[in-house]
Image 1 (tube, rainbow, N blue to C red):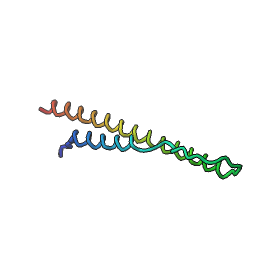
Image 2: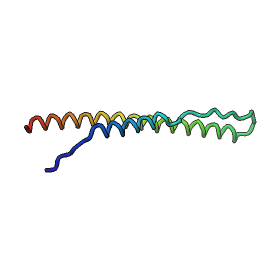
Image 3: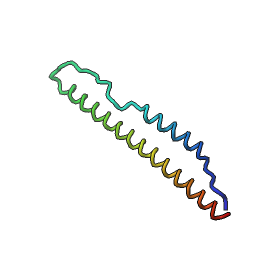
Image 4: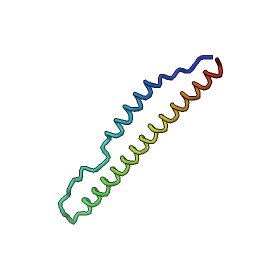
Length: 89
């Protein structure tokens, strides 16, 4: 049976890179100022922009949670692998 080998350093480096990219993801509005107007279109555009940035923030939160979960799972896998290798000796 083939052994599964995990290079934890490579995984940590990839996860750190992912985390840095997620943290650099801009999720806040640049606060574009519309002049006062009675046009409903401007209100609608502002509403769409707000929903857009809320969706981006949720996406970023999901990515961060996924990255954290991956770290935990890889650590658990490494620990189990070490336990199994000790019992097989």
